[in-house]
Image 1 (cartoon, rainbow, N blue to C red):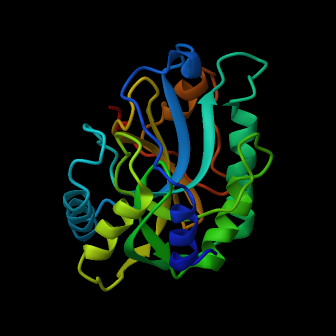
Image 2: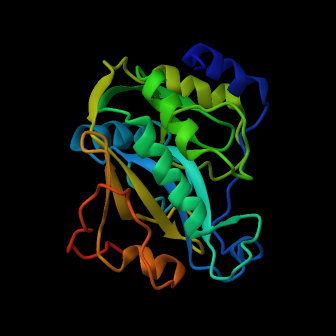
Length: 254
């Protein structure tokens, strides 16, 4: 995967950062309430501390109200389809089941990632993630197949926030360099999560629908009704043929 030095070079190749807006992008979500993705939950005290330090270093540059918990996006799902013919940015229960079956077949085991220094895309600063190219690529192969979403280069990262305006990239990068050097945080990854957020909220909090256990190779829904309610269908999506019933825990919603 791409190195921090190459990421910095790409960032500096753009004269300005991209301005983000806090508004309801109704032309995008068209009234559909939630957008889903597969991600690794790294909402840990040590990671939150690093993000807070990065946000302080970029004080005055970031859009207010960013509430996403620390996570590493693996693949986008889209909007859950509520009709027999999903739109290009939607997915149905059969597509989701294919992703679950792929995870079951791949049998990817727990691994460790290293969360490192502050770098940036043109739209958002982030903490670079390294140290687990094999497992991350294997997960992407399972989850990012048969999708209309961009198939470009994957850069694992933990987003710090969104830029509030167009700022000269060279001056922003100087703030990165002013940060004290950090020892990479090593995080043990034992599960991945099917997450979502309210589509009308920019940078709103994530909620978790289900988790794939990398040791047990099974999917755990947050409630027995979570899968059925996702598409308003009668039968829940199965985790795989050998799994036990879903958990009785309530589904976490925003």
